[in-house]
Structure formats: C-alpha cells, structure tokens
Image (cartoon, rainbow, N blue to C red):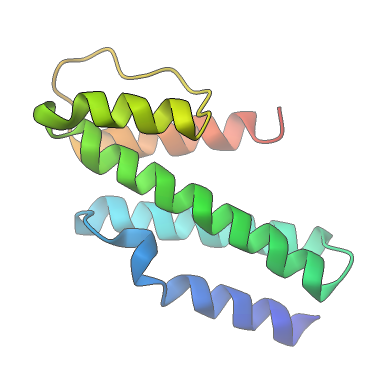
Length: 119
C-alpha cells in the first residue's frame, strides 16, 4: 500500500482547493496538518479503498477548516463562519477575541483538532 499512500499524500500537496483563499502561513499549517494525519490514517487503513476514503474525508474537513478561518477573520463574514461551524459540526470553541490573526486562529483550531480527534 506504500505506492497508494504516496499517491494520496502527493495529491494533498497539489490540492489547491485545500488552501484556496488562505495566506501562506495558514495554508502551510493546514497542509502540514492534513499530511500528518493522512500518513497516520493510511498506515492504519485496512485497504487502499479504506485509506482513500479516510483521506478524502480528512481533506474535506481541512477545506472546511480553511474556509472557516477565512470567513472568521473577515468581521463582515462572522455570521457565515458561525453557520459553517454549525453545518460542519465543528466542536471546538469559537474564538472569543474580536480580532484574531488567521495564523493564530488556524494554529488554535488545528491544535484542538489534534488533541480531540476521534472524540
């Protein structure tokens, strides 16, 4: 399954939809996070199909997280960000600061996701 794993990981790195609309710092953070989790998931997968399903689900979550960060950091889009968080059933707490920089928000969310994954 190593070849399939490598192919899935390369696909993440080339997935423009994952980082669309994000700044360089938060985009790199998100890609690194998705790749790290994808490696773990593909190692634990029972089959190539299972690995692909898990990685696709992870990438979808990554895209939603990226979109949330983009929306939240624009004060005019906070309502849309809140709606997205509800629709995606994000369980991390919404930011409490009026102003938060995108890299700080991305770091906070990804740390929370990593600590609570699977709960």
